[in-house]
Length: 389
Image 1 (cartoon, rainbow, N blue to C red):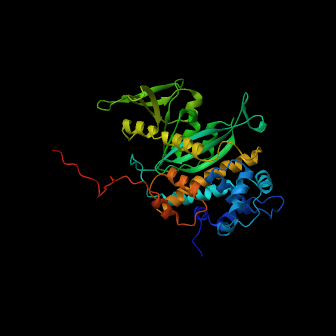
Image 2 (image 1 turned 120 degrees about the vertical axis):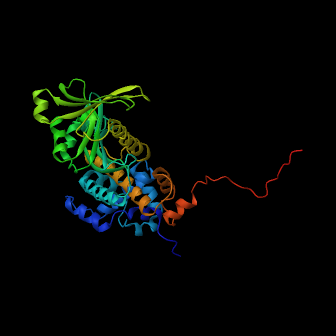
């Protein structure tokens, strides 16, 4: 009897096999691997991410335990520890980076109607990077500083829907500011970042693209005040100024005027100095935009806690990149399923159900609804009623 498709197959519906094939054809392997195709490799690594497998042997054991259910998931090859190890080392990680880009575009279309809490007149993006720690003893190619090893994941996050819009994976010692050179800025959108990205020549690209940026100003930047605006009635705002950069290099990089806002955060007790090219929004809104940058920190924390980004299946540079890109793909596939099926609850709850029921033959929305937490009060009709005397 056909009981339906397994949960894992329903998650993989987020990427069309033909579309995946076009991505794989861009970066062919030196030697054809008929035993484990590119899609088999991708599906096995997504399975490992969703179910938190600890090793290649663990992946092999769990997948082959229910091999009769894998055909409709697209896995036709021989998933073994040896084949996975060879694929992680030799199949170009750019295949999975290209697939992640496809999934980002699809997720962006699905979540297009989501509005940010600030209700700005343009989309809000957060820019940041995170270090993914490795062992220097087994990954000497990833030396970062001293005895530490790491690779760096740069992310452009769509704040409203908490989805990555563009990512790059670079060496740990690569400067954060270089990521700005890879981005295409959209007119009318807002870009918020910390002061590690304060490079005026690169920020001027955002201005020339007719977009807005908000970041923090370093204390050693030389400038003079052109104009000061009143700040009465704006709680926490100490000053709101128009400034002109003073240093020759800074002024050559950004010849136009900027807006400087000194803000005191009563909750944390910190004094923050923002710089932006937007002169129309109230100073408090600029401060709130910067506060929304915290969403990208929460995104980094989420993927590190709930996906397999600690304990790598391969020690090679390509193998580590494959695992990181498949983690991004797994996040996007779950987010796409969450949106398409209008699943209730958080993304984390959906991921936990998938991890324990990957081989269940039940529609995903039924599984989620069946396990929905009941929050309304329970009324037991046969409860004894006590009448006080």
